[in-house]
Length: 239
Image 1 (cartoon, rainbow, N blue to C red):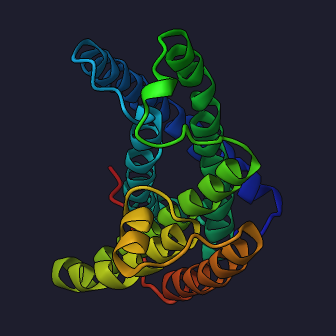
Image 2: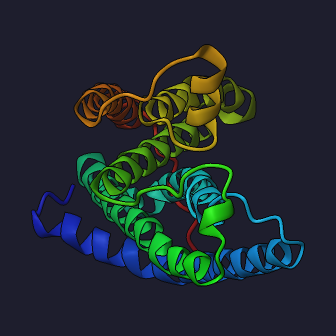
């Protein structure tokens, strides 16, 4: 097994190169959807909320969950080349942190042009709720929530790889609950805000939200690592 410390960095760079085209294509599609939706609603004169809060936040984190599933299923290729599970786990976690930061940055910055557009069009005075304040809390909560969905996706992917279809389906509710709990802690759209409203729960303060999210993430990461560490890796197909 190759335990050279530089292997993890090489893996991260290689994984990142593979992810760049997919991430770029995803955001291009999302921006097209956003422009189309907001244009249609503006024409109908029914702009009452921040559309970016709904389009730029929830859908991307669920896409990240799917990427967590896809990336971890590619692990057997690297293991077959002599990469250890520890190196692979470290590379995945580093990649997930970078992706969570990137998506949170895009989400937070996206409020600025929308606010300018709303202000220029006189929409701000007619919103059904105050325009969201996109600042440090928005960025930090987005980072943590994105990371939770990526790790949850990785656990789901491991479940399907190790326990096949039916076992993988049984793992989905277990893996998703912690990610949804992190959403609840920060009151994010859609799941967190909806559950908080349904149960009458207040949005936690940033320190409390971070503490809750850190505990949940620690359990989720530990469970994912434990499961992946003991998972038999089938050799990748070679020609």
